Image 1 (tube, rainbow, N blue to C red):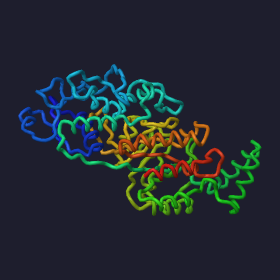
Image 2: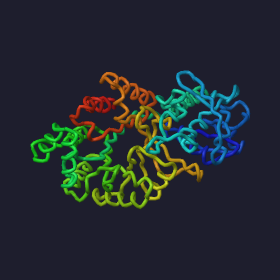
Image 3: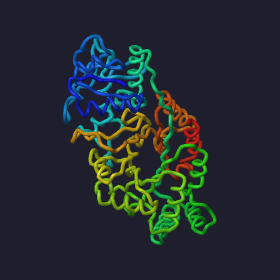
Image 4: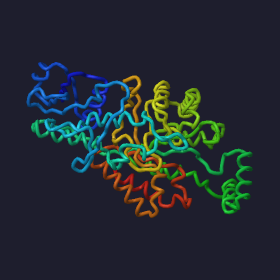
Length: 430
């Protein structure tokens, strides 16, 4: 067990140390502000304060973990071996940077509460982030820092045996529309037909009616392939269905269609099933509650997993709504157009509510790769190379790799050619 001395034990301090020590390093941890207890402890120990007590393992603290609310921080990112660091700790510190304050800044999404430019959907974009601007978005820096801490602890306490964690996969299948042509209802089918004719998409029109007459499988109906892949794995996929009302933003299939409900039930026999919350559910908790109850009635169990439409988050209200409805797993934390680590980690973590200064029960599962982000690489070789680099980064720290693919990604459409192979690369990495 690691005992940490600090002059003040705050919720921020406990939250951050637990993520690095318990979740990443598998190390039990306790805190004290009593010098006598610290001196008496005969196993792993370190001090986290402004000045060392004597010659113990010491990390000089930044003020961030002892503050409340937001302040204007002056952050200077510097190169640290093969990674980056910030919040310099000075010469007397056993680590050159306060990795705990830096980790809290990234985990709490501190920068997303500060003024920033949003995109057309009101999203925080990668180019606005500290990680993107300082070129460490492609690394799970918090996990790397945790292992640097472990190296220092091993040096000071060579007889202590550390536990190891293993690389794991957590694939997410996002289903905004289970079928492209089928189960749309008469009006939507007629509308689609006239759109195809008006835009001279005669090939698509021909395909539409082949599908509707039962001569061809719907291009978005890739669920047999997904389930076949699931059967080959010893870990479960999480499949998130959009079941909200039809709107400008969400072109979902109605749950009044028995075949759609049967599809959800059959997928739930093999995979974890959750909801892709509709665009308007992000703002309105009553809509989110309605969608939650609808899915629970279909799968006959409590709903745990949610991902918001368009990967949009309104911090902190989006997460507070999930907590109020007792939904404990979120899969929205990532960037739509850029590979990498939005929260600086490849380890699931608890949401810290900065306004209320409290760790919450909501677990955030940051994703590191969205299929759309791979589209910007022109060749299949480039896609594979960038995907493999990302997997290697997660493997190097024995983290959790969370990719997000869509059901239509596995279709035969030209745009998604080769994406089944990319998904196979991910599955074979386990």
